[in-house]
Length: 116
Image (cartoon, rainbow, N blue to C red):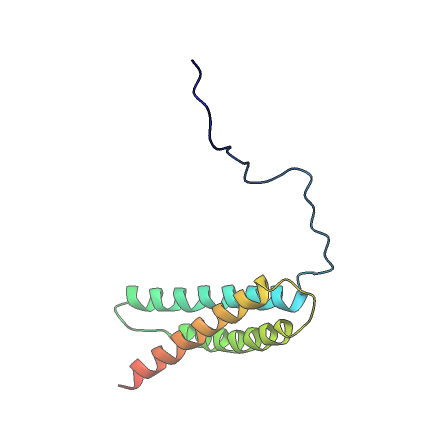
């Protein structure tokens, strides 16, 4: 005798479902995210190279971090500007705001630890 199935397993995604929307990814948000990634990688590499040199940071590393600071501030402003637009997807503006804020906090932390 065949057992009765009490429930059905539904597929996670139904074929033929479309979402019609006018939303778009804002260019400022994408640029903000790109600036956040660039500045995060720059700060990471500067700290790593200074650590590998025994804590002796070269002036080039400081210049790179200052440039990353400028990128992070510009990226944060662009992320906020693109986040206020209407009818957009919020992935890239939010990602840009998050990355640039984290980079700014790291740079301020490095400067604070250098003053102690």
